[in-house]
Image 1: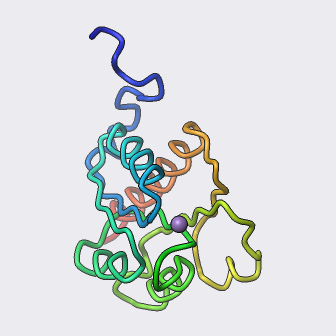
Image 2: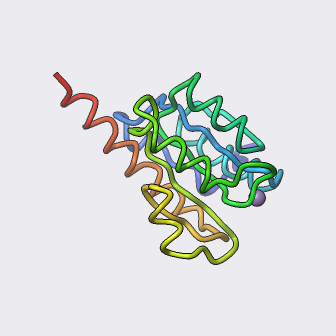
Amino acid sequence: MENSRPAWRRPAGNPANAGKCVLIVEDAPLNMRMFSAMVAAQGHRVLQATDGSRGLDLAHQEHPDLIIMDVQLPGLSGLEVTHLLKGDDDTRDIPIIVTSGYLIDEEELRASGCDAYLAKPITVSEFVDVIESFLIRSARASSAAP
Ligand code: MN
């Protein structure tokens, strides 16, 4: 089909960002499918975790370039996982974008150490802009490393 490509899919606009690895920690199947599709459409590899402890394990094993973290998860909450990852030398440099459909206490958000917060529902353009801007930052940071 000619027009089967989703309207939100952008042609590779940021070649420096191609082929990054993004971990999505999300327990709602619809959100997981949507986020994964958007990340894959940008040319990145997607890792999925549907609970906090699996997210924690994957972050350590795979060291993704970015994490999209839901707050309300079975077991460990997304803010707890974020706090653990930001308190660990091995994972503290991974940018974490926290997402929630509920209002989150600002103090709690800051205390978690997350790098950004997106309130659900998240628009496609907002989502894509935020993930690409963090991936550009991480690309610059790694190319600036000695
Ligand atoms: Mn959830």
